[in-house]
Image (tube, rainbow, N blue to C red; front, side, top):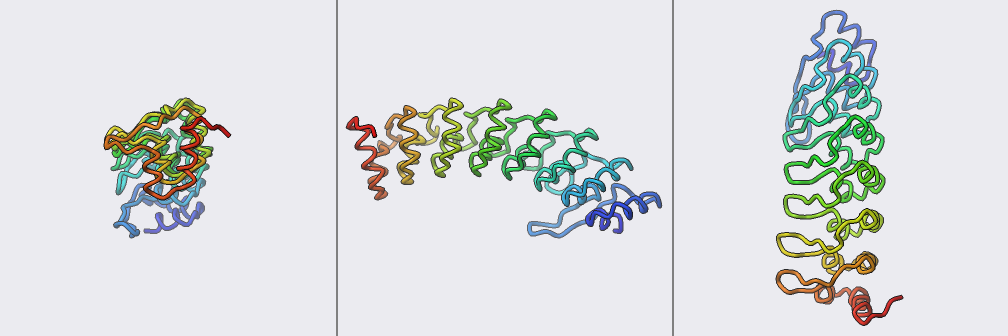
Amino acid sequence: MPLLSAAQEGDVATVEKLLKAGAKVDGSAFFDNDEAPMLITPLIAAATAGHAAVVAALLKAGAKMNRTTTFGYTPLFAAAQEGHRAAVSALIRAGAEVDIVTDDQCTPLNIAAQEGHEAVLSLLIKAGADVNRARDNGSSPLFMAVQNNHWAVLAMLIKAGADIHQATGSSCMPLFVAAQKNHKTVLAMLLKAGADVNSGRHDNGCTPLFIAAKQGHEAVVMALLEAGARMTAMDDGCTPLMAAANEGHTCVVAALKRWIAGIRY
């Protein structure tokens, strides 16, 4: 399909020539990828590749900016996923809907947060995208930023009013995953923003302190203790000290014992 090929390559002159000759602006074709054959349009192709000039030409010719293809992807989602600021900007200016979701309920803002695309995230927030819209597994944009250690994205979401206590479908909160993954800067930001240091998972009572101790993350353990974390046991009675000892984390065991003894240094 000539128009699709020209759009993928960013050849705006050929795109305009083909459109003038009567090429179907929304003509689609299947494209093989690693997951499954994907139905794409010239606009999806241009947006995915970040060819903003081609995106603008196709929109001017009447391309359907909110059309979804395989997996529920829109041109805006494709551009946001790849971090193409100019293409995202062109689509937003043309009136693309910012909160259309994919088949797994992922929004352009959610995927931008996951990938750490700060400039794209800023555009979407300014365009009114829902900063708390979660995927079908309950993962919010803020949770994805925390999980992937994108502290700059996290700062933007907090400033935009994102819920720092929004849990996933498995009752995992952002602070918990920051502690689990040893993301110290992200953890400090969440604590500063007022995250509940003692809020555990609903399914087993596991707290951020417990998981940090079990994983051997001494600096995180100390940060949580200094923020007021309690040495609460899980539902099965296992405490953070017991978990650290069971895993052989001697430094964490020593730190917890000093804290229990009231030694602060």
